[in-house]
Image (tube, rainbow, N blue to C red; front, side):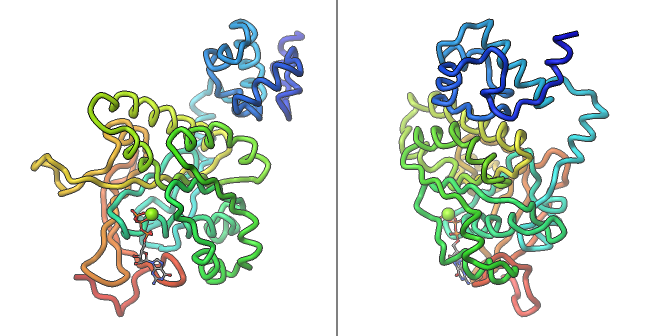
Length: 328
Ligand code: GTP
Ligand code: MG
């Protein structure tokens, strides 16, 4: 009876988990487990690394899981969980439609394309849009922007916020910027993000760019396996955060020349199979011959058909293409 009672308990903080002493709680925090949600998704191995006995680790994780109801799931409940998936507008109705109504929470959406194709502009726009009410296509939440290339500009947020009727100074308060200096630092930032995500009601996690550091640091064949293993670990952390907090995970990726002549496009995304299989939805962006128009192609999705659409980057942000812009 007692175990049934405790299995239904909801723990607000990791300190509330029975049998978890202060020093263990502190060690867990050092490892980035600041919330019950993150503990529920931890592996026994991760906790053993914190010097916690295997059995104890198992109990802690189970207690956290029962608290957050994340373990076994009946399919009718899965349907319900899917119904919790929400969608974030990109600012373009056409692009939203291509994505099945916007960018969905609880999974990873990747935009890849060459320089200037609009990946970071969309990232900025999402930081603004996530703050809107759900009626307006937002998620009533904040954004976490992991910036690996010193890309983030408040100057871009200002007109975008004004355009959707938000006070820029208010909008700034709901965007948390995390600058990542190396790939290890980038991994570290996400590993330790759960508390910030929870406390700031973050509903959008951006990694711009997902692959740039990895690509410049791991050069040559011999380091490829390690790079892929780290990318894999990084992306899984991102998925776990997105699921635990019903957040959108948005990553950007560069392209490289495709040596394979049979490949449909002359370029392909960086990151190989790991990134391809871990991103649930992938969009390929390219520039129209000139001007503000961009072409977005949905190249992979768990349930949506492939397709293409146009959108535009203007001073105001991401918008649908007006009549006056022909595409060449
Ligand atoms: P990399 O990070 O270099 O791979 O490129 P990216 O895909 O992130 O490109 P980004 O999103 O930074 O797009 C840059 C492009 O957006 C510029 O070349 C402009 O065409 C457009 N852009 C950026 N800011 C403005 C602006 O204030 N007004 C207008 N009209 N266009 C803008
Ligand atoms: Mg960029």
